[in-house]
Image (cartoon, rainbow, N blue to C red; front, side, top):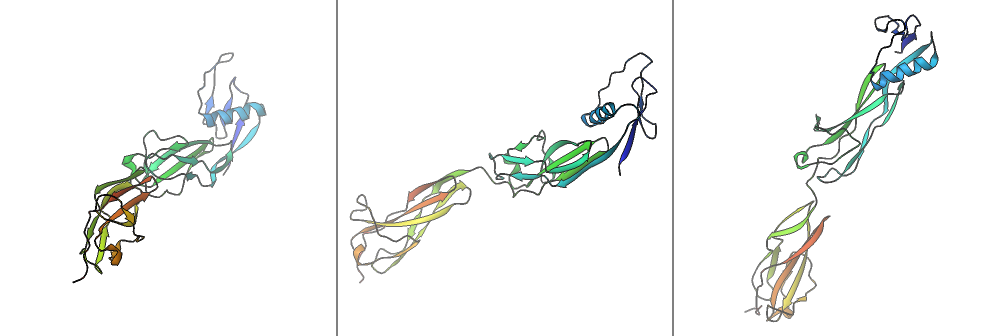
Length: 249
């Protein structure tokens, strides 16, 4: 509901609200120093511009479109906030507060926020508060996805390994080994053969994690090269070598 303010001329400063409880006064011919809030200053400015005896309607702030966040919720990435849309008279003054799992983040009151390691697993929201002479109102954005760790290219910590017999017709299986990296890593496989197990490695053409030894492999050495890839990059690591491959008994 609108609140009506009237500008009276009974005193040199002469600002009253309608129930006459708030009156700023200076001695006749004197002066008073005011330090109003921005929203209060806007109300004073309107009254001064309107002139003696004028009235204005003060409509409290109302959010008409929620604040929003753009960007990827990941450590080291920048999230950008939008205040949304607001109505009110005078025009509301907007302030921001970023939240992690609904808890205020100290010092995070700007238009952007960069998640830190302590935010990993938490969702980020942006609370915007509109304030004017009619009061204040707060609106909160939709949450981001849980914050993920910073981008990190794959790094091998345990090499890939082949299991199975070095005998024609045998099924070999390769494991990817162990890798560190973020975000999620995917793996590809490249089976290779060599006449001596040291040099001249040639791709067999098998690109899944299993391979069945064929006649062309007899007398050859076999390995599998695993390539790990994510959004931050890729890396490859060789498996152990088995062989030479023998014929079936």
